[in-house]
Image 1 (tube, rainbow, N blue to C red):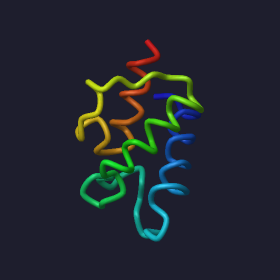
Image 2: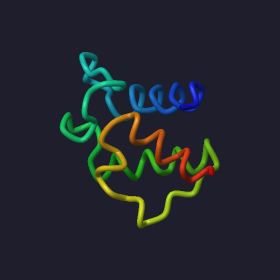
Image 3: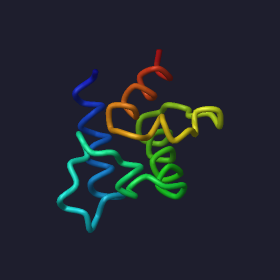
Length: 82
């Protein structure tokens, strides 16, 4: 798992999606169960991934299980880069 990729995604989730939830551990907690990732959160995250990381996320990838945890998001991005 790319450390730089993980850091970039974790920073985005903390600063843009999890504001107001300082107790959330974005590297361990469920982002879906905590409410950080919902339909709007997925769209913001996909936009970030596509613009900043230059990785295309297709409609077929917009499944909650791909966004459950930070590790799941990293795996999705890495699979799209491959």
